[in-house]
Image 1 (spheres, rainbow, N blue to C red):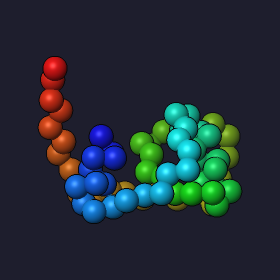
Image 2 (cartoon, helix red, strand yellow):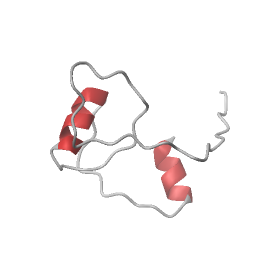
Image 3 (tube, helix red, strand yellow):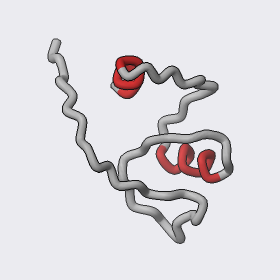
Length: 67
């Protein structure tokens, strides 16, 4: 879904690897190893000051095709 959205808008990220865990992705981003767009999630413990939450000002409607 995100790949298709980026492709339609001319964005071609250079993906080196993919992860499924939000906490693991956030940790790698905090260490400077990439960027990510993640859903909002509750933080366990103190939030990492290197991470920022940005408010999305525009919601993009996505039509899900059912098979």
